[in-house]
Image (tube, rainbow, N blue to C red):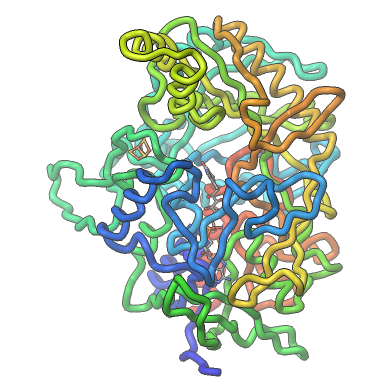
Length: 597
Ligand SMILES: Cc1cc2nc3c(=O)[nH]c(=O)nc-3n(C[C@H](O)[C@H](O)[C@H](O)COP(=O)(O)OP(=O)(O)OC[C@H]3O[C@@H](n4cnc5c(N)ncnc54)[C@H](O)[C@@H]3O)c2cc1C
Ligand code: SF4
């Protein structure tokens, strides 16, 4: 087996977590090897454009549609999650409904870009609400890294909108770019809903429609200049007009692909890393962590390199470094540990898998609200993310959609086929019908918190292998009453919001028949995953209840770090990427201190 030259750090995975650490280590002059399982697509404009064309031609516009997997690096496919014939082996009572991308750039290739901070109370679920567990660090410790992550990723927001439920910012701080302007639909809904009281348990909470922080380029503040879009040359002249990728152009396809790269993806960070110190090896699937049995130190990472993404032919090599970082995302990190016989303290690796199971609510506004224009979503309702009610049921947040009923029913295609096939409309009558309904489509996405449950887990089974002979992830997943009660509360609030705004509620779970059902007190809910994998190698204050410490260092292997949302002990309601990016930057600082010694 061939052994590569040694690096200061070997990173597994070229997603946002791996890319941020690679950039910061190479900035400090440390040598980094990144092993990336997928092909190195998106590295040039032609390549990126081919993915865009693939998305345009796809009949099902799923998150993965522009990003096909290689034979050697298979990935979950949202259209096959439920049937259990995809990449995941689903063994639990409820299918796990999320996917990720195994390509250079990772899952940010197809993310939406919502970049919320966690609430201070999210870090203290056990002490504050008596459920879940506490983090080994708090909001104050992470706040400076949130600020840095917002600059690295390029987040557009105004501090004035984001200071709620205890979230604070240093004096004088603001986001690197102004907020993306709220859509017309946001403003219509806000006019009707702002100040509306919602009762959860004994609390009355006033809600409002609030613009959310987005990893989409808008108007920069104070000389900030977004960088890193593929094939975009930088020029620091003061009055150069914005180039491709420097401004959101409202194409409404953020998930799964931004045509102009105005949305952040991890390739942008890698493009800015110092090439003198960075080696990225694509089509290199890490398959085993090699550990010294006496000391527990990692001494190498075995990986399988394939030349042709269409076949499983490969050679096996070993990468060596002083430190090792698993940044392959929550499921793949856990799978790689387990495939190497590393189960962590008390067998905790792979356990407490979480997501934000989410529901859709959709309706028809009384007037045209300009649906199907602009970013898929620009605002949300965030006020129900925190409160004393979390002792009894899950918190939740709403995204307000600008993309009509696309996600919930497949409209506008389904609206057209329904008018033609079911109502026999054509010509002017068809145009009139579509013109009278499509611009009035309203959609809310209700994302619900989930607590850590050790039985929700990723494991491996020697009988279930992928074409390279690596294990496929076996998933056991169940949505418990805490989350189900949160779903019930969220859907009651959505109904009340529609009533207040004069929106005719058209929510019909049977229209989303491809989503799995769950039942709570006689009510049926159809949920989908949000792509928010978390908790499979949780951090903690001691090895009794965790796999890694607050620096994301493995308790049992002191030169090994596991990064990403798998490190979260609990996940609150914020979309995870900004928090995992902040944690990655914190770990990068620790590594620079340590390796530069
Ligand atoms: C549809 C969708 C929408 C989303 N929207 C949002 C949002 O709005 N806001 C938000 O915060 N989050 C969102 N997310 C989640 C977000 O995409 C992830 O949290 C984030 O991308 C995870 O970053 P990561 O670097 O940890 O992992 P990834 O981005 O998944 O990167 C992991 C990398 O590791 C590589 N890899 C995997 N296995 C191996 C191996 N064995 N060897 C070598 N390399 C390997 C992969 O190919 C990949 O490049 C969304 C997810 C989905 C699916
Ligand atoms: S709205 Fe369009 S241009 Fe803006 S980030 Fe989304 S896909 Fe890109």
